[in-house]
Image 1: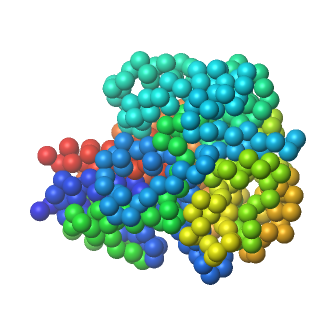
Image 2: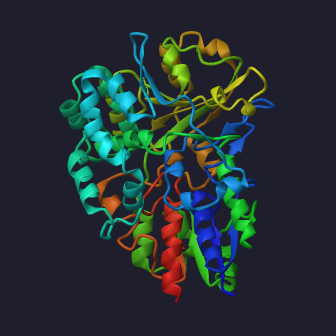
Image 3: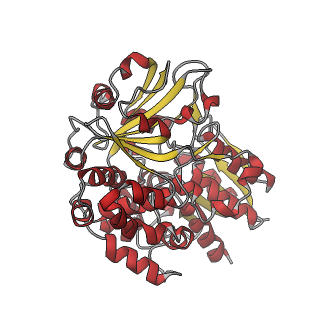
Length: 472
């Protein structure tokens, strides 16, 4: 039996391991941390009984992943919770825009902008499975649904500021679109910012924006359970360095890395040509995140009661407010009033906190490797829309970019996106060969390969499929 090892146990590493195990290989996964899962972990970061998601918290792409959908993860304990509404966006007038899971309900709620919103996201939302099969695949290939992809590309391949101005008349609708586009980590004058915003909007009405009951760790636990049922093994607290890799290189026919490209280039060194090594070390990282996890005595006291219906709340105000915040980060500055992404899971999963208490997950974008303490700015933004928020805080855990990287080396400088979103790195992620390297037995399967960041496992899936094909 052939043997394969995967370095890193994030969702892409686990997806790759499952594909290899399904093909009959003997698979070992090596993880540096004591708990597997990479950024998909849940940890007791504040007080006893409070379960916090270390990295990802809300998972539209996991629920809408073409590969994960084929796996019997429910048999291994994964249960999705959709909540009452996927997203709320509070405004300074004390109201909020709510995007419902049902597209028609959202169309009605957006009033005069409803029809335009449906035109923008409806074609993808209504054919999410077809769209995801192409959008979450390798870039350089013929799509299975070329007309759908062409229509989407022609519609949204423009900056978020242009898209919002051309589609929406209301400042309220433009504001909620700004929150969606903020997931791109881009300044809103950059073309792909509009693309990401439209895709995230479509996912609301496709797979939804659910959370796993019990926390993000349930995704990793279910994938590991399935892997182990196929004979695979996960080894924790084992950091693979250059010396250890030399041993693995002798023992395993295939080696896949769910890591940052620069880290991989350092570890494999002489096994990769100088051309590939240089490309990997030049790969540009995305901005980082500064994150705060809260233990709360009660729910966040939002001025807009509608915010209590939503798992996710985008905190940033108007389109212009959010655009200015994201532009500052793109220019290498910390925003004075950052765009804050908030998740309030215990409104819908009370098992993650003591009775009557709550957890809150919040982060903002910062320049990669930023050393600024953004705690006060994050809390000021939440207080802006929820006066009295600080009085609800029992404890907080602050994660700077350095903390994020220390707890998961793949999050270099706080980069949770697997590299900067720019056209060059979309086409060459991290090289034209995507998952492959100059060594036919060594592959990259992390979020730094197509289709990029997000909890979907598709990078690992495609890398493992390519490795198996080339093994024959």
